[in-house]
Length: 403
Image 1 (tube, rainbow, N blue to C red):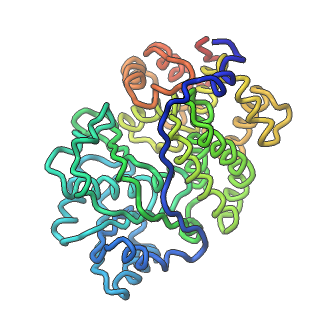
Image 2 (spheres, rainbow, N blue to C red):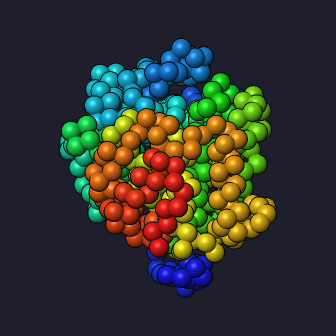
């Protein structure tokens, strides 16, 4: 496909499609206090609070429990979650759910807690295995939809956007592979975006999670799938990230920037109903094999994947650059902005800086092509193409175009 063909697809491509858009979202500082009312609204009387272990000592967890108990809700906490959450974590969460006789979930934390919370809500009333609901074909139709518990989602990072997602990314330890677990009713019923909960996030995690939000918006923008609403949300999400991410990395107490980054993160996960691409197709196996931070992986991989897709996305990236106010408004200008942004906020330039070598390149190339995110990459890539991108990302070689 030639350069101009990509933008033409958006106007003339397949228009017989189905769209689903997110849920009730409550935005604003201090709105954590509404958590008990949100539970009551959903008929939850005994919520299981699923959270990150690193948050247990912070006031937000105690406050959430107190808000619930003051309102007469029987709230208990589950926090046995790894940064790359596993099937074992979900199984333990399900046991905690049943042991406490819970009837709903509050998912409070970063992407790991949100993903586990949603998976627990899905599985609490199912008789099948978690892996039976991997996002392949119509697997989700096997679930007893009426047995899926309601979820109130409260993100404490601005990156994954899992609070408005209908899926969870969970590591299958036996297969050493991250799997996407999907059901439409995994979408949380109420989302609370309270920027006060993100103020204490360290600058390096603010940077990495912010780049994760950028990767979601950017891959959604580049997807060949026809979805103009997602396209519009993605481009505005990227504009907000350009304006607010450097600002919030410098000053983590900037409540306006924290709010805007939470919103941009939610926008990214809304937009990627349009699909993702090679960044995530590579980040998922790398996270599974190396237990590396997902947002950091996407941030490092980003320019290498842009180069690999250049022949198809150049025109679309030029339009994006114009919208967000870059000069020159070209593919080169946008790529230069990404590289400068990464340096400015402290993102490593290559995977070697994350202690990732290329000895597993062939395996990673095969895992990437099998990842669901690969299906909406702008260019269909073979295992060898993914292997090339990966090797270049390890060594810091930017000349990785695949045609």
